[in-house]
Length: 212
Image (tube, rainbow, N blue to C red; front, side, top):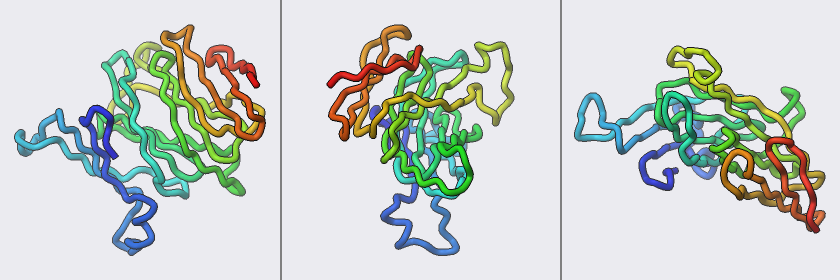
């Protein structure tokens, strides 16, 4: 998977290849992060390459999506969101040595079967929205800038935290998109297939209005 601007590349085991390569020597959570704009310390003529094994919460990566630039106090950041069964993983691609952030989507550790299928990015509000198949609500992941909050993180810790909440839709979400610009004017549009409606959600108030 590669970012839209071509700078970042994440090599991982796609679901179709995990069965074929399922051996004791293969870890589906192993990745390789490549930054084509940062030279390697060992050989400046080559891009920076960072092997990384992300934490597993019982699933394996099914899809990786790249964010636009997020404005943190310590500099702009491109994030990779790894979708796995029942959880997502957030990677700071500008700081590949930092610890990944795992965000469970299930309130309980067992008896849950959620498949995240889409992530939408909202840099203005430091939010990430996740849609899962068969789920009536949208997951909102709020990123908190720790430096702006007066803290001084120490690597490999991140300079932001992730917290999870829900945005009510009321029917199974089939698709979603972000529109508007600026913190106060951004809205999340969620298409509902079973109710044949479009729900417009204000991320600040978390209130949605259905339009049939």
